[in-house]
Image 1 (cartoon, rainbow, N blue to C red):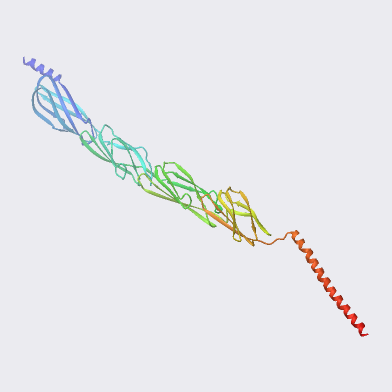
Image 2: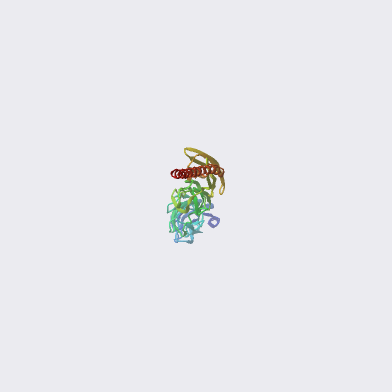
Length: 436
């Protein structure tokens, strides 16, 4: 009978089912896993103790006095040591023998790390970086904090992106996460390559470097954003027209073109100054200056040409008004004044290299004041003036009318003188005869 009971006990031990579960299943050094051993016998069996091998830190190391059980659960904790695969032996001591169960503990030394989507960054501009946290096994509650000024300053999850203006040094990140109930914080440094920002380019080139007083010079302006980020609130100020140009934003690689107009009311070398102010996504201001020059000759864009003055009983003044400039002129008034009388002639507009003729008539004038007023394309008013002297010019028919009376008068005078002389001679001869 005892042999039969012993045989049944051995069969019960041999048919025992043992499962061991650990959470987390893979550990980092010094992690603690929450484990559970469950043993089930086909019939009640006396268990005196459980014990673990000495090469792994297990708590509790052993337990005794379990008693008669058909199934039993043993919770225990396991603390990871150095990286590698560690074998743990569990010894279950029963009344009829010892059961040995073996399981492995995997300890990984490679901590999670950040991989960036790019490693070339540009100084003095806003860089946008995306990242991914790579781990040898599943982790949870991941928090990434860039250890430099960024937006946002904290990112939750295994993936994300942030914006920042870099300094020329490695990027450092703090990665916090959980493996089971084990909290970890890792500091990682990432080497990147820095390049100087290509910035914003301002190009302005006058269409003509030499012009006339009052003429309008067009200055094409091109603003190009060669940065890798977006710029906002672009303001262009100049001493030309328009004096202010605003551009809401310029994408990376985008350009904007427009024309400035510049004119001068005096001769000489004149300078056009342009200042561009813009902001990045962090509202940091940037300023860019440029200058170009235009030489204005000592001559007005609108000129008199072929002016002729003919004097007599009536004074006639005529000529042309010529646009010698390269832009259209408007509201042209040709004004002539003589002895308090003012006359004018209106010309709506003149294209470049175009002209129009005028003519005025005055009575009894010794001089004529002639001037022209006009507006250029900027609405600026200009004026030039000429003083014309009037010289009396007699017609040939009038000259012949005066020739005959003068000749008759001379003839009469000559006859009178001859008669007077003859009378004197006659008187003198008669006196001599009386004396004789």
